[in-house]
Amino acid sequence: MCGIVGYTGEKAALTPVLEGLRRLEYRGYDSAGVALTTTKGEKLFVEKKAGKLANLEAELNDSHDNSHSGIGHTRWATHGGPTDSNAHPHLSNDGKLAVIHNGIIENYLELRAELEKRGHKFTSETDTESVAHLLSDAVTKNGGDLAAAMRAVCNELRGSFTLLAIHSDSPERIVGARRNSPLVVGVGKGENFLASDVSAFISYTKSALELGQDEVVDVTPSGVIVTNLAGKVITPRAYEITWDASAAERGGYPHFMLKEIFEQPKSIADTLLGRFTENSQIAIGELDNLPELLSAERILILACGTAYHAGLIGKYAIETWAKIPVDVELASEFRYRDPVLTKKTVVITISQSGETMDTLMAARHAKSLGAKVISICNTNGSTIPRESDAVIYTHAGPEIAVASTKALITQIIATALIALYIADKNGALKPSEVSGLIEELLALPAKVEQILETAEPLREMSRGFKDATSVLFLGRHVGYPAALEGALKLKELAYMHAEGFAGGELKHGPIALIESGTPVIAIMPPQRSELREKMASNIQEVRARGANVIVIADSETVIPADVHVIRIPVSNQLLQPILAIVPLQIFAYEMAVARGSDVDQPRNLAKSVTVE
Ligand code: M6R
Image (cartoon, rainbow, N blue to C red; front, side, top):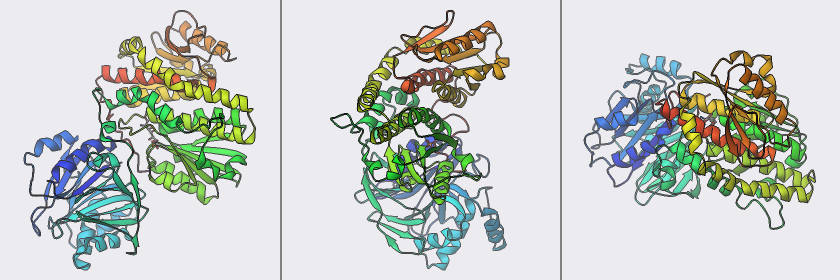
């Protein structure tokens, strides 16, 4: 949930460390801090400040040209409020060792009590500070070897963590460790990097190393040594990053979210690329070694937040096309009940980051119960795909805004591809039906482009709703999870009450919320759907009670009079959410801007939720 970066090389370390923090700020922005090694054996230079990175930068009026190794941290607070003293790095009492941390040390209270008995003085309320004190003792016990000390300390810790540490006695060295939280190595020429995510060092190198569970990495300008916690040397998987720094920049847009909304046609096209053969068959080689999928009697989709909505939408396509029953469950709920999974159940996890702790733990739980796990993920080499039996990568490119947009759209595409893959292989659909649906998928980038090109009236209208106190979203069938997503986007971005309802449920309670002027956004099923008339009735019901209704409908669907209309292109009904969600994203974006909220870094949130 926090962002972590480390640099060691010839450059003045502060520059790459701050650049890394800028790119990782989406992971948390309650406070930020840096630690730099100075002269061997002297105290470290440390600066940390509550609030956004800009507060820290304002304090840093020296470029520290003589410091060539350093670490930086941007925090999403868990243990202890967002104050200067709780900001990372945390230091040993002699000021020679600094630690930064992402995750939660679950046994920190016992460790702290023990360390206080041994005379260590604590200056924060964090779980992390115990690690700094433990490490400082372990360095002494291990003859100054920071990597050996880190291995010894990790064996004492419970919970999830990425840790980076520096010590002024080895000023060129950074030592990292990971358990359940992300850490990657960037390999440069005469310089190396450590970070929560490759975007931190993408402008310096595209060569990366993936670290596994319970591994410790010892980095100097000339080398990277990875070991397990017993000290055995491991060869990490090396990979090249396929996108460049400009993908992680705003590129002239006022916010990353707007840029990412406008990138959706390309993200869809990239995710579809290479997925069809010349004779209109689905090609997902990643699934060919998983025969359990084709013989599955049930599919269970596990995910959180927006990714959960992708799963709810994907359920319709898998059931309709592949004829396999699908359940969709919040990953955080799945793990803590007693789920019944048989060998004929295949689990699909959906996660943009591949690091969401709830989803990771749910996937492990499913595996421990004997299920095969397929992951849909946007982040190469992240933990969930590493631990899955098969992975389908979405190709949305880096998503920096906290609110998920293009990742969601590509997740829905991935579920549709899985549905078609099964239907094609199992003969649940005729070849002509499969090729018709492939045509539908291939037409989506242009259709989303059309929505974006004609979005100006929607953008203006959305701003007109800025003083609303509550917005309701209505949908039926696949439109229902789209309505849930519309409400989530508005809550997280514009900080206002918003709820999504199934149209049929309105009369069972939610209609009591409607009063004069309440904005209601209704997603209209296509003209040919038997649900069109039902939704038209729901719209009349809320209009009769004074609601101010916006209808999202395709261009051939007849809609009730006296409502605002947003037109989207005609598509297959099961794919319609891909189009209907785009105006909902724009609505939430414009409302957030008009209400003065921080679009890319909404309050209290972080992009990757790496704690349970
Ligand atoms: O990285 P993941 O896809 O696993 O993240 C899941 C949710 O935390 C994420 O979708 C969250 O709901 C977003 N803030 C929604 O915009």
